[in-house]
Image (tube, rainbow, N blue to C red; front, side, top):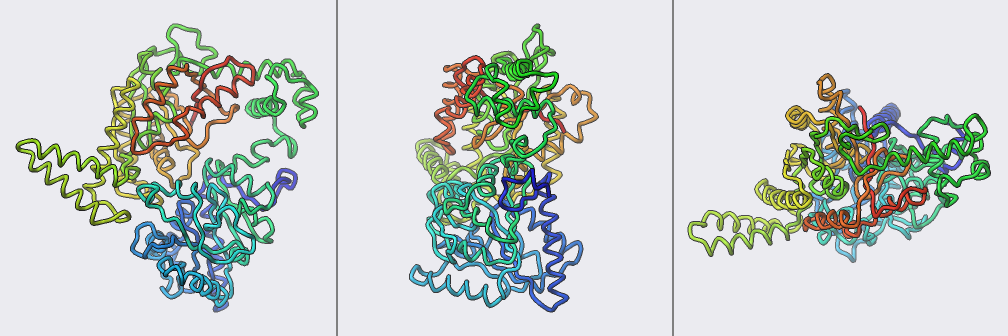
Length: 620
């Protein structure tokens, strides 16, 4: 442990290169606990969490049982929470999740598994929660409690406002929590409004606490929980007072910690070119000055004096960083033909490039790089959008019902359309029979995929894209959120696209996402496919650019290519985004995120643009 580097952290925090490595380490700790308790003739009591975060950890436990023979017969489990009103057979109940993801694959006796009961009547909830507390006490307390963290900072369902001493109880879910769960429930309107959760006090009584967090979307709330004050607005912050609490993070989940984001504030820094750029951009933002107006005193007062006391003085450093940042800006994301490309992000040759734009779910491409798409097409490049999945899980039953009803009415006005009418009526009957929470049939998922496909083609087409391909990767078409498993078939489909196109440029996203998310799994499929292409002649000349999702844009120092948009181009992008009626993200339809990036460039002293889309280089 480097005490100086971690001086801002109030909880022990361990950073692993990948989530899989973190999960393997934690699984080994669980194995040691189980074996220790076995030798003493006792039960190992585990507190367990749900959501996508612990999925790779649970798969590692299953591997230990199936491949290494680890017995879980002496394990007793208590789950953190459960949606109120959902039965065990509901596909989104946590009882169902835990059994399909873990319990069905281990030899834990059924009477040693405990999940809060979400089916009790409202007037019986308090008594049921008290019984849950007593069951934990009767088991001798929890030896090891596994936790995730929500974007509101909650552990379990302890939403903002939860007291440190709170016990197992019924709680109203925060609006952000419900929005985050909307895709699981085929629409926010179907997400339960209440849940039963262990309280913060209940959680803190466990002898050891381990919180896992993966991906850039969790980085900001992790930093607040680890480095900020203990507060009821972020229940995870209460882990600071526990003597045996620990955060396990992957690299992207740790990105906002001070030792990672601002290392010069905690100790000596190896001043690489990238660290210098990061530091100067941060300093300009902090001092609210353009880069070229930074003074030696600004550097000295912010722990960065050593940057400007050597051969490279303040003026030279400012000029260097200004030029580096300025050279990221280009209106030619495919390279400018017959131009000096010395300082351009993309080479001029070949003049016409084959471009692949990968969208894990339809809309990812338009939402994050719609302006760049339009430029690439307008500048004569051969652009093909590859929708890696159908996105059908984002389409609500209401949307499918609307489509089927229109088809019924149309069929009845046409002669010879009996088959079409029967098809639509069959789907309407299924939707009505299964209710809001039943699993859709393969045929209903196909219909939803067609709806989404039409929107994707319409949106890309409005930006000039004429080639949109849908891969329908098996991990998605046969899976559900929080339950995706990549296979060789996914990788082979991706390899087929690469072999067919042999691209000069690739645009993709998901490299920093939660590895269990659609974006994370889709990017892994691309990366594995690219690894098999490493010896191909085209690969050596191919450049890969990664774009971010809608929740977070690249920070200034991370940007390798910044593509500006005029007001008209931003207008076109937003209009394209509005084609997606099945998944509107209202806060993005203003273009504020792209405007914010442009404003940051302006504050550094660059030219003023309406909006900017940002990209980073990626290499295997």
